[in-house]
Length: 538
Image (cartoon, rainbow, N blue to C red; front, side, top):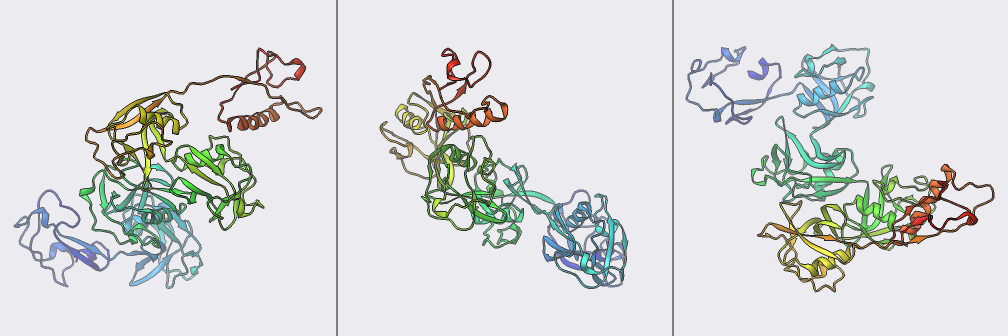
């Protein structure tokens, strides 16, 4: 009765016990008794207006047959409309995201993220019911939008429109990284990270059209959401097109507050390494994973990869397919990074896909599995260590000078440490407690401790350090030959030359600061060189 009265076709399922949430105000009807001849709900028999013995926990609801459907899967497909007892299609003439979002909302999703024209989801059958839909965004149903409706014999099905609805979004990060949120019952909510893994995360990446090399993030890595936690356990197999197709646990995960799942959909990955911070470097391009040639591959190039992978600083830039030979194309060759690029794909290199390098020269990296965070620089901050593919803290209990000395030396930050204690929560668990270094270890994770695993850290303090690095300054005079007629101080030539020199010097672990001559130039002929104003400072 209700479905027919509101123009929503037949009933799919009746719902009781406030399935859609408890209402407020008065309960007007109780013991409703409708017959097939009743035209409206108010014509049905009931106890009388306001006469009831119910509470709002018994509010009734209904799920009606939608007059719009998507043919392909529940979240994306060809748009079809039910009218005059028959399903028909929608012409893509004039179809835009406002119209597509109207359909998504009518089907219980949020908005549309894509329109697919020209029968991408296949040609339908029957009439073409809608052409030139003109939704404003305020409507609740597609049929209330202005359009040219009715069966048209003049339109073929080669222009049937399709859409892709948004039921998952990432917040607190970037376009392809962030906290996972799912749209359900008209509200966005999070996903519990207790059993969240890379298989679940890969489904989200694929659903959002991002690279499917997924890094699953736990413990509210991107911050805690403000809404509900909808999913307790995802249990994806990995071949699903949407997170909602996974074997989801019961909706609602109140016991998991503050433990939101997140994901980073990477277009860079490390393969065949001992952990997530080491391996053969592979990049995703043109729908395919490929490798990087080791020609010119050095620590500066490796540092860009390590930083992008949230792995701190590099230990080794590997050459000669140290982590095994890859397959597919060699996408990058002659890579030359300055060190501040967001990804290795932004570094100078040959044009993507033009390499003649063999897989015997695949490049790799080993990044440190210790790093300092929450500080002003890489040598000052709260200690984090990598374990079980996730970063976590070290408890401050027993943390002292010997431990801090090993850490500073490991990070290449000198050997004059000040042990620090950090209060307050950090991202991830506490992995180690009661570290007891002798001072001779090469890495802090080699020091004696109580064992790996989640720790309670009763005092609530986490270990950290401020490394004081004594800087030795010196001057270096660099002499080189230039062809006759070449002006090395020309702005178009000088920048490239300086960067190449700088890269060589800094690869030795030294910092370069260029100095000028009295005439304002950097490069001078040997006969006019002024010792008091050196070419560069180290």
